[in-house]
Length: 323
Image 1 (cartoon, rainbow, N blue to C red):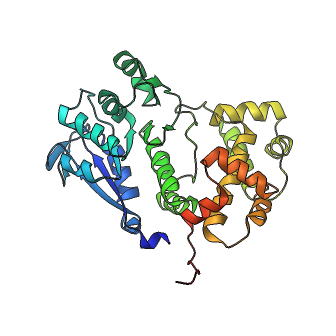
Image 2: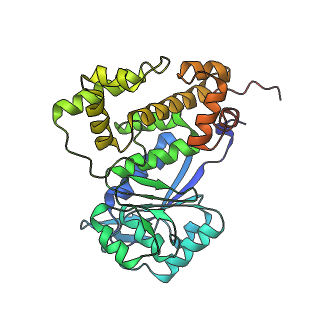
Image 3: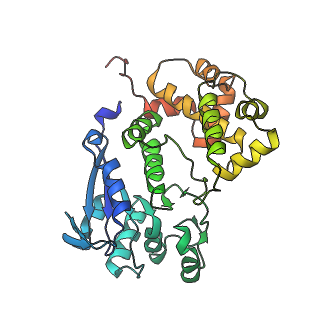
């Protein structure tokens, strides 16, 4: 069955009083944009239908009340400020959504709402780095990592907010509908096609020359996924000693160069599995992973699935199987 035959994934953004307009508007641009109507149904709800004040002095109009949460496949809680404990009805609605199997997503200070509902106890989570100390004081049972862009915990995901919310939402699109659609959304949003969750919220301030060298090298490597590439190849292209390149790469991305390269190979495999009929062993060769067995190993580690299962789930070419 192709994606076009499935109902849209229902996304509800819960706008709490003092909602951060940026976090909410980026969700609307990604999940509510007309081009994505086949894939997503997007609604903004509040405690009740009507105006909701934002943290920046204007109001937005919530088209639905809290009951919309009860029918959502994904509930997004954008940041809100000040981070007062949400109404008891909100906390109960979030717990109920989790209990019935909905995916819960918080962005920026929205993580405070999930923590207040008791949904993050014992879990790894993130929020905006500026509020990390306050979050730890109020919710000491949550394993907070304020240094990353987002944490994907499966049924509960938390993100850093602000511009990182775009990377976070595109990660959700990739998880739901594959790399091809995620890349299409990223191009429309005019952002990088992929920044992993463990990128730093506040990366080192590289010089413009360092940044340009790294960017050119990453693009060069992406164009040569099918070739054997080593740390030496990458460092030589960037015009840096190997140790210097590795250090600057990690400082900028919180990822080793070879881990980044492995992730890019898996992304390329995802695209080819979605959009071509190529055999798995041919895809492995094109992505520089060598064999079908090596591709299976990388996809299992990275995505928790196999190439065959991924293709079955995310296939984006017409299904030629006879009816």
